[in-house]
Length: 118
Image (cartoon, rainbow, N blue to C red; front, side, top):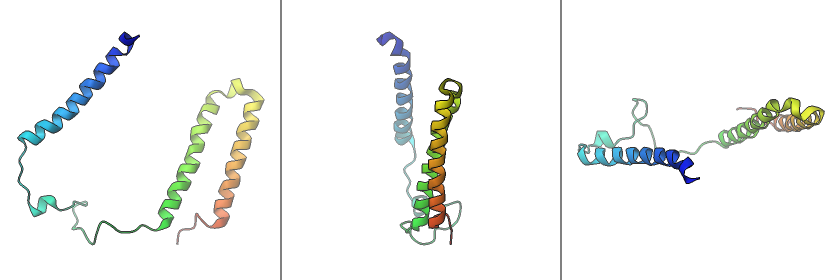
């Protein structure tokens, strides 16, 4: 049984050795000249303005959580679509109920104004 996993373990070891070897090798032979320009944060070629520790509005987090919530719907819909013929009418009713519950959640979020961006 161990023999069947040997190629996978060997591939993982080679990948880890290559990654670690590259980092160690570059740190050993690389230049170590630090300057103010090199140590400055880089942001798309523009001079940084202000501090990097700014607060984000809570709307960003709310939209991200809603995206994750409704994106997980697709994760549950895909296996159902693959096994649609095997599940038959029972699977259709269950998935219909699932979509209705998600739709009710979407309407609730919409009525609460969570999707309004001001």
